[in-house]
Image 1 (cartoon, rainbow, N blue to C red):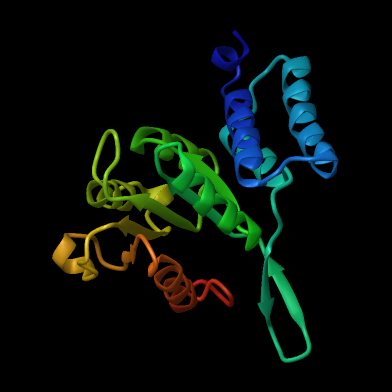
Image 2 (tube, rainbow, N blue to C red):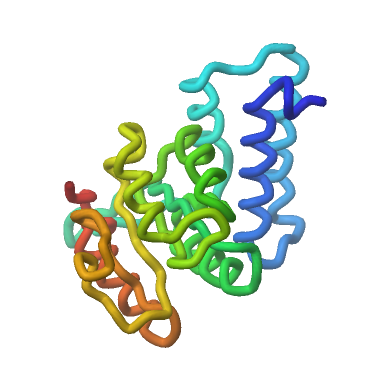
Length: 207
């Protein structure tokens, strides 16, 4: 009954699942982080009232994740940035590999299987980047890109379409302006890296 009464608990529990899935092999070093999630759930349940939307976002962003992206601010200084990446892929080996890779690079990774789930997660904790497969259970990646663009709270997120097609031209695929394409397979890492650099992920994310 708790998830129905307290939507924030549902979001925290989902975030914990994402943390475990993208953490790789979970061991004793992860226990303090997992405890932080369960503590957050307990606080809400004990309080007996669901937090508001903005407070829920603050709670989610305060929870542990893999780390932050290191940025070379100057030749001698470094800063870190908390960058959210919402990955929309069906559960399976491919999602686990990509999710773990993103987490190991320091992104705050959230996982979704469908567009509806992705929108719910995105509204609760808006990401900087959304990556979605071309083929999904409820809508195509192209349709999803347009759906996110139409939602004010998510319209500024960068969109990355992951496809097995050889077509890499976003316009030819019908993607909205600013969206990018990453080819699955051996060229995926190269495409992903190039887009992240272009977007300024390792500096200031560009509009």
